[in-house]
Length: 398
Image 1 (cartoon, rainbow, N blue to C red):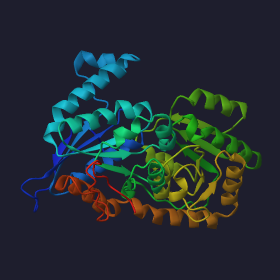
Image 2 (image 1 turned 120 degrees about the vertical axis):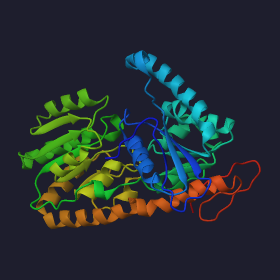
Image 3 (image 1 turned 180 degrees about the horizontal axis):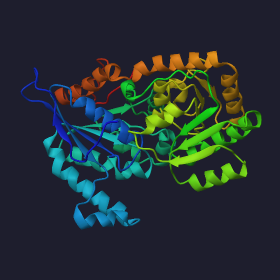
Image 4 (image 1 turned 90 degrees about the vertical axis):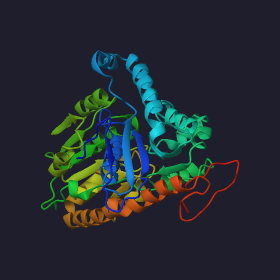
């Protein structure tokens, strides 16, 4: 998968490039924080380097300190302070050289630590700021942390990866535009599952809201009918000890926790499985589901957040109510009994991936970037303008 270095800056190809390229700075986690944002930032950075007329740089929210100072980042609490100071310093050093800031964002305290300083420094230097918000916890975040709303209203464009988050932001009078997550299907191997085996995969961070406990409970029911059924749990997090205890208490067999898997090797986990299970309680647009589509895995997932916008029940997968592990087990068993249905889900899932290709999202990103750079008073989505003097231009979705 694409690599991501801390100070990687590239100028796009010179063919017919304008004399003054748009200077774009992506502010996001590096692969030292392995997750959906770092993967998306890496994929977008790699693709934008190929676009004439754009000079793109990357600024990590989690910079590595040099030399002996690096040891400070191994000390709990101290690492947060020193990393934040280094991040803010790098913003002041590098933001003046760019025209547009593309700032990735999660929720809660992460919103305060990562995107907020970038937004404020961007304002200070009068740069255009695009907030790219990814968290499925947006509704709760905006309800509980009301101070986030005026901060978001300071930016020039709000882009989210799902129609679900567009609806959530609209509920707080925050216009947003959906540009889907980027999947490079060429990086994944599509494999037909013939015959379909009871070999399951769950690939999520091991946190409460991802519902991996539901997957384990579903497997216990599956193993009552198919004792040889197996599950690989890829990912890590605060709930790993509790989940391992749950697996033992359920007397699960053929179940392994493999920890966090780097992006460049996760394909092996998808390729080795035949059915993908997702038990999210809160979610947005999981990259793992899109990657499972690309690899040909039939999917059983809950209906959390924006998942029903990307998985159509009984067309591209089975969608069950949140928390209903019994229904999850029933659907998984049905796939094993009806392999032709599983094949139909796989084929339709692969077709669904086209919406998330670079070819599908490229023009939308370029429209946003160039629109912000071209005109500070007119928003750039679908020709809709917002010229109210008291409000900064936003990117809208209609």
